[in-house]
Amino acid sequence: MKTLREKGADSFHAALAAVLSAGLESALEQGDHAKAVTLINRGFAEGRPELGCELLCRAIAVVGAARTWTVQLAPETRR
Image 1 (tube, rainbow, N blue to C red):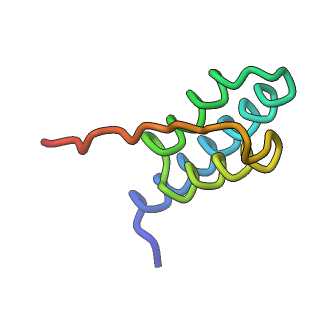
Image 2 (image 1 turned 180 degrees about the vertical axis):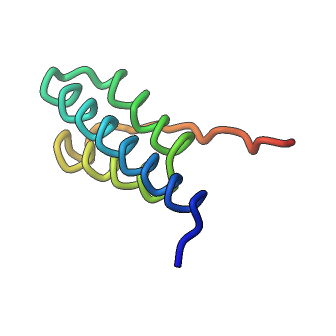
């Protein structure tokens, strides 16, 4: 059974994935690769690593491997 915090995190990540995926699709349709890279970076930085990987793989599938995709991982946060 998941805690309320875990359920909230799952809900947040699902919403984030939906927004970033829609934004990525739009950016790729418009050929706006800079925006696509920004969205992929946000997937890695604010989402789960799997989200960033899914977005990156989607971009590669649409644009092709000939395009160089440079993503930047966010630094580890310290409390």
